[in-house]
Length: 101
Figure (cartoon, rainbow, N blue to C red):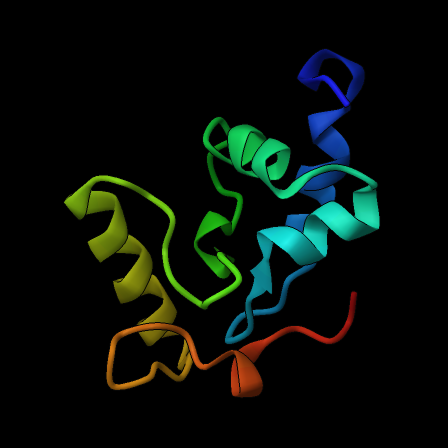
């Protein structure tokens, strides 16, 4: 599906529902919306201010932001919310994955 045929507002409304201390994966969100995970990532890279973007991680529980500062901000925000990380610094999806989707 092309980005022009999707409504990013649907994605943003879904991301706004992710509770503090939990995360969702790009794949989870894509499955709900009927999109591909890369399309979710593309829209998330342009999300509105105030959206809890940091609660969206890749399938291995890692940040998909390529730059160091964005990765650091995401990790700091997740830690501040009490999201459990593995020794490798990834989100422990077994403990933090939002099941409310």
